[in-house]
Image (cartoon, one colour):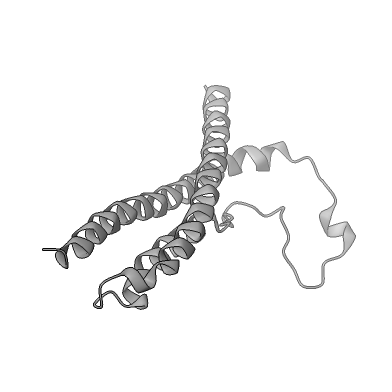
Amino acid sequence: MAQDKNAQLRNLIAGYRDSMMLSDIKALIAVLFVAIMMGTVLQYRPHYPWYLTPLVILAPFLIIYLNLLISVYPRFPRAGRPRFPIWRNADPKDFDFVADTEAELEGLPALCAGLSRILWWKNITLLTASLLSIACLAAAVVLLFVCWL
C-alpha cells in the first residue's frame, strides 16, 4: 500500500511540474503579445477621445503584464527540502549528494503540496490576466464608441 501511495505522489508531482511548465509557456507568450499591443495602442494615442489619458490607456496593460510576470516568477517550496542548501558561505562538501531514500519518501507529500500551491497561484494569476484582458476589451469598445454617439 505504501508503494502505491508513493507512486501516486510521484505521478502527481510529475503532472504538477508539466502543468507548471505549460502555464509558464502560456504566460511568456502572453507577455510578448501584451508588450506588442501596448506599443501599438500608444502609437495611436492622438486618435483617441480626449478623456482617454495615457494612464487610463496603460493601466489595464500594466495590470495584465504584472499578473503574467507574477505567474512566471519562480516560487520554490522550502518546506520539506533539507537537502537544498541556500547559504551565503557554502562549501562544496555541502552539495555532496547523499542518497537518502527514506528522507525522500517522507518529503514527497510536502513537495506535492508545495507544487500544488504554486500551480494554484499560477492558474489564478493567468485567469486574472485573461479575464481582465477580456473586460478591458469590452470597456475599450464602450469608451471608444461613446464619443461617436
